[in-house]
Image 1: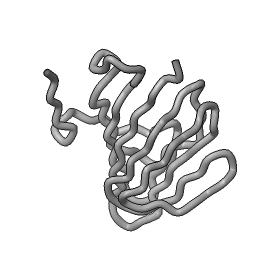
Image 2: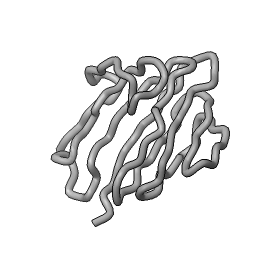
Image 3: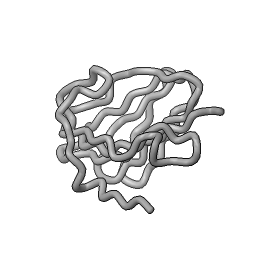
Image 4: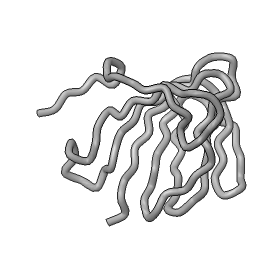
Length: 116
């Protein structure tokens, strides 16, 4: 049995995928924790104005779960407003980004699943 508290994991300050500003980024779990094709689980705090830079992955789905905050999300040239409670599914090979447009922090869980 594995129990992990993502709020207590050590985090690094970094510009995620070359995005604007420094985010507090924590790798909560890696592939060794799963018996399925899940690659990772991250918990990230984006300060006001910070973003995940636009990027793409390979043949996988990456999922963003917005826990707190508001912002904009873009995938393949389409942009929408997002808020706490939204789940964003990045399709295989899709170019995507996330930006905190609110005055407070945006808190996000991110996980990726291989297409096996």
